[in-house]
Image (cartoon, rainbow, N blue to C red; front, side):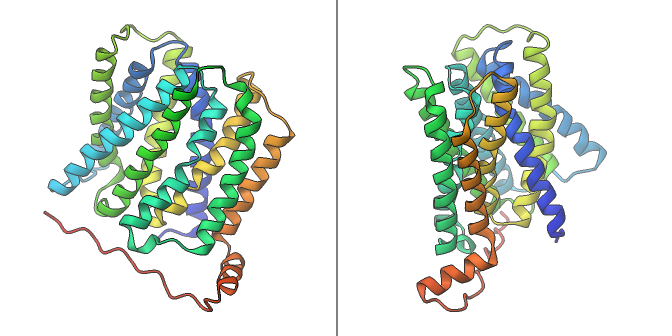
Length: 318
C-alpha cells in the first residue's frame, strides 16, 4: 500500500494535467478533425506504452475476463467517452465549460459504484460532499454558460454522456481489473480505442492529413504523453489504492484548472463567481473526505460509530 503523500501527489498531478487537456484538445482541433485527432492521440500513447511494457516487462492480460475488460475500456472509455468530448468541443463548447459539464462524473460514478461495488455504497457523508461540490460546479456553470453559443445543446449533452461512459469504465476497472498491470492494460485498451476512433473518422468522412504544427501535432503529442500515458497509468494505479468514487472527485477539481487556463491562455471568461464556485468545490471534497465531517454526518443521522466498509472480493479468473 502506498503512502498517503504518494497518493495525494498522484491525485494532484492528475488534477493539473487533466485540467489542462481540455484547452489542449481545443487547440488541437484547430489542426485536425475531432475523431482523427483523438485516434492519433491514443495511437501515439499506445505505441509509447507498448515500448514501456517491453522495457519494464509488464504482464499482459492473462485471461478472458481481463481481455474483455480491455475491449470494454477501449470502446467505452477511449472511443465513446473521448469521441464525445472531442465532438462536443469541436462543435463550439468552450474548454472550461466542457470540463464543468464533465464534472457530473463523480455523481454518476457514485451511482454506478453503488450498484456494482459493495465497498462503495452510498453514505450520508459521501452524498453530502458530492452535493456540495456539485453545487460549486453548478455555480461555475451558470457563470460560464454565456460563453456557449446558440444551438449547442447537443454538444453540451455529449460531454455529460461522455462522463457517463467514463463512470462505467472506472467502476469496471475497479471491479474486474485487480490483477491487470497499468502499463500493458492501457497500451492494449488505447490501441482498441485508436482503431475504433479511426473507423469513426472514416465513417464521418473526415479529411485525413498530417496535423499542422504546433496546433494539431503539438497538442496531440502533449495529450498522448502527458494526458494519456502518464495520467492513465497513474489513474489505474490509484484505482487500486482508493475507492472509485473518491478518485472521481478529480472531475470536481478539473473545472477549476480548466477555467483558469481557458481564461489565461484561451481568451475565455473568468469572474468572481467562478472563484466562489471553485471554493465550494474544494469544500465539497473536504466534506466527503474529512473525519470530522464523517463524525458530524453519523451524529446527525444517529448512527454512532460506523462499521468498516465491506471489501469487494477479487474477480474470479476464467
